[in-house]
Length: 220
Ligand SMILES: [Zn+2]
Image (cartoon, rainbow, N blue to C red; front, side, top):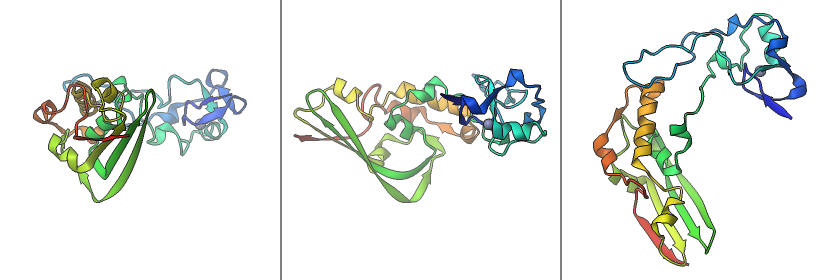
């Protein structure tokens, strides 16, 4: 059995881990400035560090490699404290579909064809990506919905045309409330999104619960 090291996060066998509470380790070398960011819920909240050593508070052990460094007062190369901290993935980001993730990405590297084939009970989705010659960088998100037809194509194959509940099960599902919640969270909590412009006009054009692009239907 294995679990993560609280210092570097690496999955490690229990036999190669030591409990932090059993060791008299000084973790002060893991205090980093500007490495972490406390979760903000409003733009009035100041941007501050979490404070204390940069470790994963939900884990309680240290791996051999980290122990070697920390016991000498050194920051381990692969440690969270050495700029690898990401923080917990919040619910608003965890539950996004493929299409919703596209709508919150600041850089677009590729175009994509999604093929969904549906049988009587099962549904299968395939994605084919083509690299863009030039990545596109977005200052405003989500992109205007018309632009999606250039980057996303959706082909649906099945014995009959997809119903709304079929479409809800595809990776192309877009729920605009989820998109706005994700963008608002990122703007508050992700440094790369600090200067992002959230376009509520663009958002309004997206479906409340459906695919954001034209569906090409092919009977199977
Ligand atoms: Zn470690």
